[in-house]
Amino acid sequence: GYKFNDWEQKGVPLRLEIGPNDIAKSQILTVRRDSGVKAPIPLDFSSLPTSTSTSTTATTPAAISTFTTSIAHLLDTIQADLYTRAKEEYDSHIVEVTEWDKFVPALDAKNVVVMPWCDREACEDDVKERSGRAAEPQDERAPSAGAKTLCIPFDQSRWAPIEPGKTKCPACGQDAKHWTLFGRSY
Image (cartoon, rainbow, N blue to C red; front, side, top):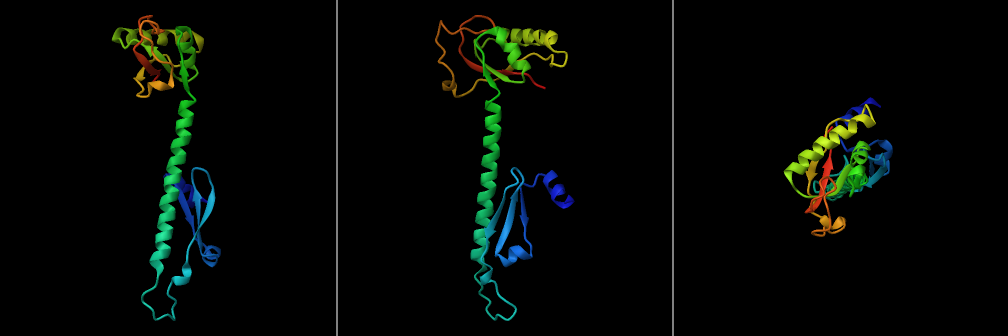
């Protein structure tokens, strides 16, 4: 109900459910916020002291240790899954462009463009101006902001090697130095 929703809106990644049935089954039910998957974490409640027990050295630390280890592992799994999903989504929107006439349509499709670039400031300013102007007539709702360099990826091996004297910058025709990501800020 509303209590679950309230905590989910606050960003809590994991819900723990402990009810009479869970106690009877010696488990705690976990519910992942990112996927909704429910999974029980077994607990050893047999080591808990009872009201008639005179022992003060119960072995509950083992049950608590198992629980905390399971929760830590589950949170690490959630983080890894979220990162993987976001990385796949981002990578699916990186479009390789080697011709200027494909640059603006790729940006208009809300993609990030990677292209060979000459690394000149004048070229970057020209790309920003030309991509801003070119976007206007195609779609009234398209952002009119021009593209800008986002970064020079460290891993250049994802794309064809830059060949000096052969690989050209699609924006100005000069020799390209490296692959560079371009995009619009919204």
